[in-house]
Length: 115
Image (cartoon, rainbow, N blue to C red):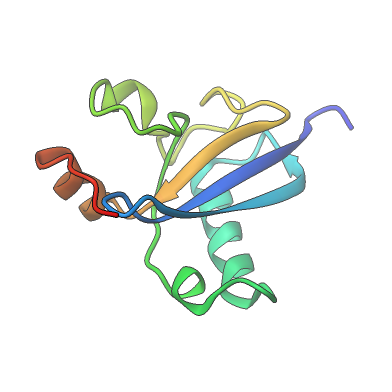
């Protein structure tokens, strides 16, 4: 199982409302690019049974290793599309956040939460 990992992806639907859903992926190749994994996750969640429709249809596109969403060091935390998962720091049992960049930018400009 060398080169494969279990990766948990947090689908972030809303930063403001702290609305997210974790999805666990087994047998993930760490040698694939971040972009390839993004495409794999998009296809998978579009048809995943039991995943609420708002999470399946959302336009995700950016990954970060920072789950709490630090508002600093974006250049270090946001994974680059052309990197492999391994180069980006993803290892077995890593959790990454998957979100829409526009939502993050709005939240970063005004980091308030609503309950």
